[in-house]
Amino acid sequence: MRTLVIGCNHRSARVALRERLAFDEASVPRALRSLVESFPGTEAVLLSTCNRLELYLAHADQGIPRIGQVIDFLAGWHDLDAAEFAPALYSHEDVEAARHLFRVVSSLDSMVLGESQILGQAKAAYETAKQTGTVSRGLDALFRQAFSVAKEIHTHTGIATGRVSVGSTAVDLARQIFSRFEDKIVLMVGAGKMGEMTLRHLLTTHPKELWVTNRTDPRAADLAARLSQRYGVHTRVIPFAEWIDRLAEADIVISSTGSREPILKAKDFAPIPARRRYRSLLLIDIAVPRDIDVAVAEQDCVFLYNIDDLQTVTEKTLARRRGALDQCHEIIEAGLLAFAERLASPDLGSLIEALSRRFQEISDAELARIIPKLENASDRDRELIRQMLHRVAQKILNHPLQLLNDTAANGAARVYADTLRAMFDVSSQDADDPAGRKP
Image (spheres, one colour):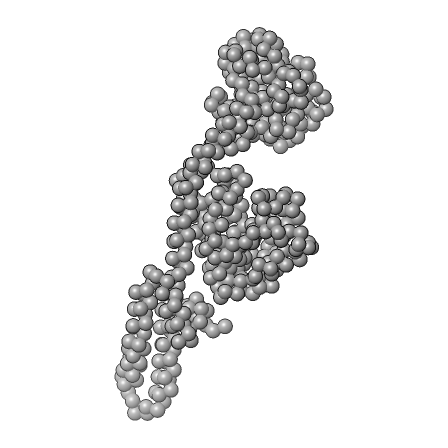
C-alpha cells in the first residue's frame, strides 16, 4: 500500500489562505466522492479544521494520485489558481505520511501543544470518509493505529497536563481559590478583547451572576447580552461610577480597560475587604498598562494576577509539556514500527484459503472431466479418486504454505505471497472474497 498526505497548516499558510482552501462539513463527502471517482481505487480522508487542511490518500496497487494531480483537484474544487496556494503546501509519503498523521492526532503538530480537540476532529474526518465509502483496509488500518498511538500518548505522558491559554490558566487559578462557583458573582470591568476571552473561560464554571461595567454603557449592555445568550448566565450592567463600591459583593473581577492609569487604587480599595468580611476576592488584571494598583494585593484575602503572572504560569505548563516530547516521539516510533510490520506481513490467512480453493477447483474440474470416462467405476472408486486428487493438491501446497508461515515475521513474506499469487493466478480479490467469486 502506498500512502500520501498533502496539505497546509497554521505554520505553512496564513489564515487568509487556509480559509480559501477549507471545506465545510456538507462539502466533505462530495469532495471525497469526486476525488475517488477521478482516481479509481484510491482511498481518501479529508481533514479540514481552522488550523489545517490535509488530504490523506492510499492505493493498494501503487496507483496513488501524484502530488500535482491532487493540487489540480484542490484548485478545481475551490476555483483557485494553483500558483496561489501550492507554495504553502507540504506533502509526505508512505512511512513519513504515517508519522505525520501520528503527530497530528497526538497534538504534537498543533498550535497549542497537547490540545485534545484535534483528536476528535481527526476521528470525525475518518468517520465521515468511512460513511462516504472512501476508506478501505489501507487508511482504516492507518487511522486506527494513529488513534491508538494518540491514546497512549495522552494516557502515559504529560503532554496534556495543565492549561495553556491565559483564559484557561485563569480558570485554574480560580479553582485553587474557590471550591464552587454557583454562588459566585463575576464582575467584568471594561470590554477589552483579551478580557472577554478570559471571561468566556470563567463562564464555563457556571457562576451565579455576571456583572458588566464599561465607561460607555451601550458596550457593556451589548457584551452582557451576548454572553447571557451564549452561556445562559444571569447578567447585570453596572454603572461605571459604581463598580468599585460593588466590589464588596463580587467574588471574581476581570479588568480590561484602555486606561493609561490604574482605575483601582489602593486607597480606594482599602475599605472593601472589611465590608466583604474578608471573603476571598480574585482580581485578574488583563489590561496593559495595568488597571489595578499592585498595592491592592497587600490586603488580606485578596488574590491579584496580571497578564504577566498568567503568561508565566502558561509558559511553565508549556515547558512541562515540552519535557514530555521525547517520550511522545518514542511512542510514535514504536507505533510506526508496529504498523510497518503489519504492512510488511500480508494477510496470509486469506491467501492460504484462496490457494486451497484454487487447487480444489482444479481437482474438481479434473474429476468432473474423468468420471464420465470411468463407466464401470463404482461410487467407492470415484470417492477414492476424489480423495487422491485432494491429497495430491494438499501435498503440492504444503511446502509453499509452510514457507509463507515461516517468513510471516519478516519482509520476505510479501515477496513469497506475491509470487504465489502470480504462479497460481490468485488475485487480491480472490484472496479477499471468501466465496472465491470472480469480478
